[in-house]
Image (cartoon, rainbow, N blue to C red; front, side, top):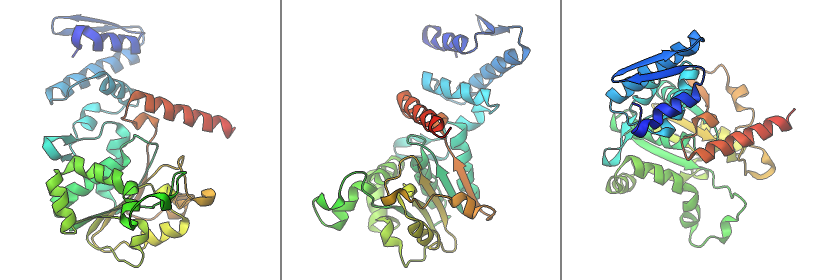
Length: 303
């Protein structure tokens, strides 16, 4: 609970300087004039104990995320113990922030879910996990992973090989997420049987996608026409997740299919928009700091 050489305890004391924390044996005493803060720290320790009893391993990054959850009046023990999937090699896939828990809940409850947020928030990774879970539970018959093949400052035509070889780098992040959830032999078998299909967005035109879990990744790089085409492909028994980051638009003229979409589609049942932020970044802490710096700079620019 207190960490090796009390490092977790020292970090908690640094985070909540208005309270005095005394640890003696298996008892923790919390004193302070601010009764609200004392209660908050007490709840933090209760949550940490519950997480440890459930088998959660604490580290400094997890502790930082728990601080944010407690300050926002969330229950870390409910969020961090929610298992989405047991992936390849026994790895458990779980949400790591309150925003991620809200995201997976929305996917489970809606036909179409839009997950919008910066890099590192787990939008694609969690969507693939939910797709594999739905396939294993026989809620769908296949998984379709798609992305628009839009160059991020590079030209597609200069890449060697045929069409599929050229678009492979654009689809590689989806393959990587899939290999995290399913062992390599299993992935290859699913692709061979066309139970899992990975294809560029252009290949979706003219199709009706029934009984499928469909993920459109990097949707900020769709045009409005492509987005409409994609959303009207959805058939019976299907579930859709659309992920995107509106700060990384590479589509020509900057006219993204995500622009104004929430306003257009508001009020439609079984459709949800979930916005993730820098607080939901689960990569290296420097990534969260970079995202926060960009968000602050963009906010200052609009004033």
